[in-house]
Image (cartoon, rainbow, N blue to C red):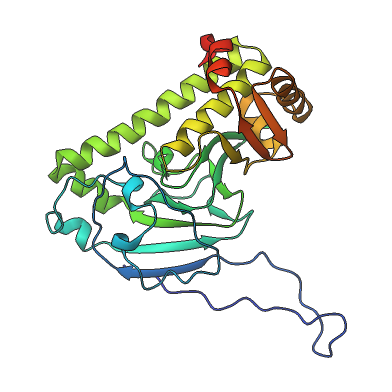
Length: 290
């Protein structure tokens, strides 16, 4: 199976240029590039370098040169061991902010690895609103939610310009049957997602809004630190409204909680820029919820 890059979308002329009548504006398409490359498993404990710009050309690199290879899949396997994965076509998709990787109800055929950028999983509620279910950071895998039924129950959307690697689930499943290491890594990833979801559900059900926001910041800090980023200073890629949707709070409540944590000396907040200046104090103050 192979992918081809789609043709460039039509760009209508500006208001000051002559030309044919303006066409209706369309959502920009995802760039999709693929090459049949072996998947080399690498150590998930190593740090993550800085992400590239969206203008970088990804078509000629392999997993060996990928910036998140060491946090995506395990490295204790020797190259050449897993022929099912070596034959798998590995595509990469570039997405602009707001574009969807897949939508609610689509068939689950691939697992996705975040190469750079960030994503959110959203579920559609009966009243038409969307509920943020999770966020996905560089080096993390997503797409497992559709394995039980064969269809995705959520929509995953980029919250900034981003890129994912597309891993065919059939080949991953075959490799898991061949290797305990692959099986362990995939089951560990699934387990971590379940633990995170239950943790969030418990937070929403039994804690105050301030505790939810503090826990969210600490969890985000730990996840970024595990991928080589600063644990103390980072930018929130998601909006306060999206954080509120995730934590079961309003935008105003999230803003008020951040201001409260800042007044207590735990963090500094400059728009989306967060610095945790007293992580131990923050953790100690909200130990019951972390």
